[in-house]
Amino acid sequence: MSDSSSDDEALPNWDALSGDLGCAALAALKEHFASKDTGDGEGHTPPLTVPPVAWAAGPVEVTSNLDYKHQTYWEQRFAVEDEYEWLASFKQAEPHLSAVLPDKTARLLVVGCGNSSFSEELFDAGWVNVTSIDFSAVVIDRMRAKNVEARPCMKWEVMDMRSLEGFGDGSFDCVVDKAAMDALMCDEGSPWDPSEGTKRDAHLMCLACARVLVPGGRLVMISFAQPHFRRRYLEGFAAPAEVAAADGVVEAYGWRVTAAKGFGEPGCLETFLYACTVCDAVDPKGVGAAAEGSSEGSCAPSGGSD
Image 1 (cartoon, rainbow, N blue to C red):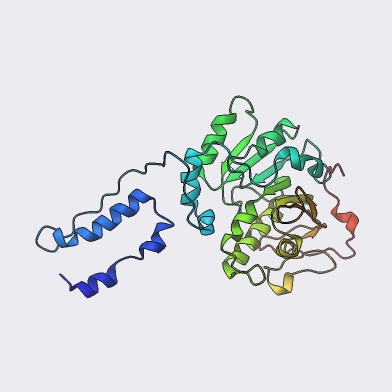
Image 2: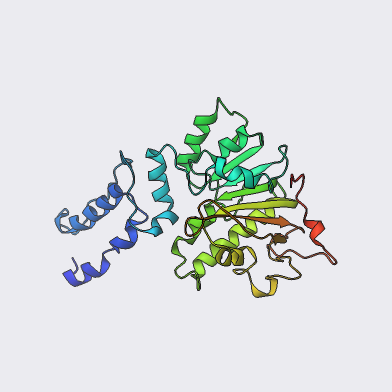
């Protein structure tokens, strides 16, 4: 056996692991390392046995904002939580959405749907071609089971909104995000000088959304973020400088961003709505080319109601 100093150096960083492992798995791993001094007498450590995951019986504790970026946190939370509505409800947002959503025959994709009733209320309001995604298999299974009889035409898929790898180019007329990009900002640091990881995640999400939209399609975003912070992400702030923007078209994503509209309680609790309308096709690398002489008219939403 090695001496105690080398043993200490071999121990994992428990704080770092705590964000990715469930309590039971973490406890089993600690016990495994502690047991190496009580092995079979020949220096062999007993095998690691991790018990089955047992979800919490009540609300899952949030230890820091970073939890909101861990898939493990959401799987545990969605296993015990029936519904939670982030930011505005559909009823609050509907008067503002009516001006930016396409007509009710359009194909809508709701990203980061969680267990919100927002997708269901979109469907009930007449947008019957709704697909909702989340990276949590737990919540997608629960939402699919919840709606299989009442709303059998709704589609629910497990997917990462930073790639949308399950969808082909131009698969949707509108992508709806309610607080999904907000979750990517939890490790942003200073909003004036955000972390490279946050910038990368936001850029990948914008690329994916632009790719699955048809020309004239829209990304409609409801967010807690104020315009001077959120618009720069939507306008190519996190994209390579050479494809940031030109003539009002964000070339990295091939869309134009309309002015943000605030609603709800003014001040710190205000909610903002953003609309990004695709003008040009976005190539597989996410670098769109603005057509010569493109005008604001070329960005009209497909089947829009505004």
